[in-house]
Image 1: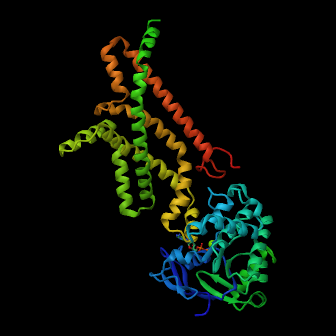
Image 2 (image 1 turned 90 degrees about the horizontal axis):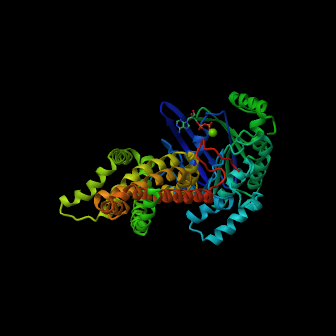
Image 3 (image 1 turned 90 degrees about the vertical axis):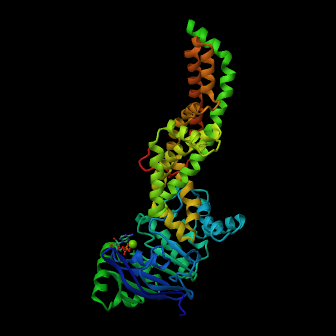
Length: 250
Length: 232
Ligand SMILES: Nc1ncnc2c1ncn2[C@@H]1O[C@H](COP(=O)(O)OP(=O)(O)O)[C@@H](O)[C@H]1O
Ligand SMILES: [Mg+2]
């Protein structure tokens, strides 16, 4: 069990509908995994099962050798080590950018205010928003909000960051600034699992791409292989459709 | 003209009435604190308490909103003496009106909590906050801001309710107004107009203060859905 993240046979059912039908994969330290697939396929549910924002019905998850899904595990301790970036940002509405970023370190990690402030300023600088520390979320563009939410995740010094369609709620002209931050993180060796429809990002940044459909992993492989010679006809079909929708280099 | 002469004469009693009205203000303070604390707790239980505690909280709210204030006052004042406990008029009135207000306040806070998008709680939990931390640092600070307008209404109505404590022998403004009236029946009308003016002043300044507070704590992008007002 050397991988940083191990997901093993995760199942999730909502009422009659089985949303995840046994999903397994691993992520090595420093790796960027991109998950693609049609909407309603269970990608968000899968990410949420990893940090148990959604409780999986069956299956197990390990982070750095610790079983996340064990009832004995303090889940808050685990979550503090897993960044989560939401599609619609979910910045804390009543807090400035700076307060959004330092809240976690202060309240979850018990960091002193001065130290947390310095850290938050660094993380905001890292996403190119040093000058927006005092802005409230509503005063920022979508792209800026998403970058603050990435800074908020980074401030916890996570072992892994999960991104759930981080650019899907953005106007097209704001997507680039967020992807740039993510590309930089990948290059710096951050371990990331990214659900996205941005095929350009997937192609250039992913170490491996996972194609999911109807609650199962249909195919996975390095981007070069998956894009040029998908083994499964469903994968080829999806890639063709997504390219039509979003263009080749999203 | 005669009437203005009477009003002038009641002016002599004004210091006494004002002194008595501080008891109303003390009662107001006590009942608002009780109502705020218990109202918040009840709202949290209704939203996050699960089936059993949630139901208990709803029943509590329903009971205290359904029983007339006067009945509650009598129950809290005379009830304990059935068991041989003496309860001061002030304490009885604070509890009766405070618990009643908590039921109304819980309604206001519940609405505010439910107006907060679920993503706020999710984001807090994803950072590793416990549920209590998320409530304390994320949900309640937003909910209280959203609740200020509704809370102002509740304030206006409980300010006036403090005069009901007259019936449990609290030495508040109505009691003194009654004393004046008993001595000088001709001044009854003028006396109660004076009392009315005092309450107009309380309500006005209270609402002014809350309006200031709302402005002071206003945050761009944080408002009740459907509320007018510009973002940014
Ligand atoms: N909390 C929920 N309750 C009921 N059904 C849900 C819930 N969350 C997701 N679903 C359902 O699960 C399926 C997969 O959803 P999701 O994981 O969001 O897919 P994706 O992210 O791939 O679009 C959808 O059919 C969705 O309606
Ligand atoms: Mg999704």
